[in-house]
Image (cartoon, rainbow, N blue to C red; front, side):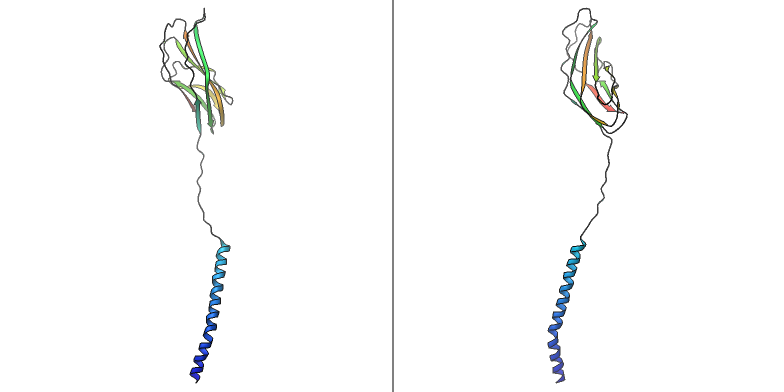
Length: 178
């Protein structure tokens, strides 16, 4: 009888053990979920940054054809000009300048002159590019700035004794440099 009683006793106490275990397990899961929600999640990343030297110059348009078709009596030379071309630049450097060069020398007795304006630096004024196959200064003293729509003026001149020059083209290169 004792055996049955002990068995009966065990059987009757088993359901309460299961309920107690289930409640403890449920409380553990709930508190773990709450703990996970409140602690959050984070990651880290490494971001690399750099500012490189900026030297940018752009030109808008080309000058109209420079054609001499008239002369002034008593003048040693005749000329024609165009100032329709503009440039813009941006630099984050100091002590910069704009230099100009020409692709080929001008024909004998002719000149190609350029004047590059600047509102934030020093224009050299009218510069003779006729034989400037190596760069020559046209604007100096440029420091950390941005300039918009600055004027470029070209003048083509010919001595009075130049009879005829067939249509030709020259490439003028403007470079923002130090």
